Length: 348
Ligand SMILES: [Zn+2]
Image 1 (cartoon, rainbow, N blue to C red):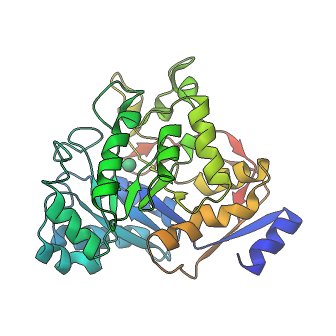
Image 2: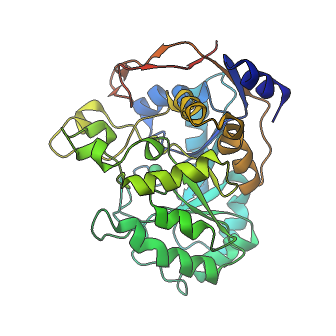
């Protein structure tokens, strides 16, 4: 932790975070990319970019082209898009050739979330071994959307035996359990040295009650769905203590307003523009501000074996009224906490 951060904690009116990373981010493409990318790049030093476009990002050319579109959209911001490849069986030669262009490979079970139709039908450790062994040898982490197609509240819990099978069959492969939502997943982290996890902002804050306990809240509907209080509390504990196996990954997933406020609501919570401000408030309220640097950057650097950037972001304790909508000529997106007032704002 740098001196600035320590000073920030002492006077409690400003706090500086070094090189904040969002280790799970959806930036979409085209006009939506143009709208949302700057809302991450103005605050974050970098982000793991999810590859579930249509068609999925599964070639070297697609990775390079998408990265260039992101860099164009983020203009002059100091922002490093950490690219991922959509998981398929790949040869070691191909992975060797693309290794320097990607930070991880993302595995989706087929059809489990937005644009995952081309994902893996069954996670068979023998059939997938050539690809996963090559990834382990080349130090390419495997990011996993860990849900079965069972009952919606049990999908992550039911996936735990897949994580166990992967973690024990490939002990040298770094496996990131993406956007974990359950106590079962938190408990699993401790069982295998090669398992890590990202945790979103919204899963640290809400339960299923907030989504569907009263009037249905489409802007809080996401996959994996928010779970029970004991699950949220287990996530909070490891995040707040700065546990080295977890890192922040927003899973910020913008959908057009009409796709959310609709009969047939798309899954995803849009948190990019408010994530750091709300995390500061959450860690402050729990008297754990000293661990925020770990959750937002240090742990990610260790897990992904990467250097922090020189970018710092300073927040001050003044009100920030969250816009009710972010929009450009063709897109409108509603953020979490739309129209509400937060305690911390980004210092210009
Ligand atoms: Zn995601």
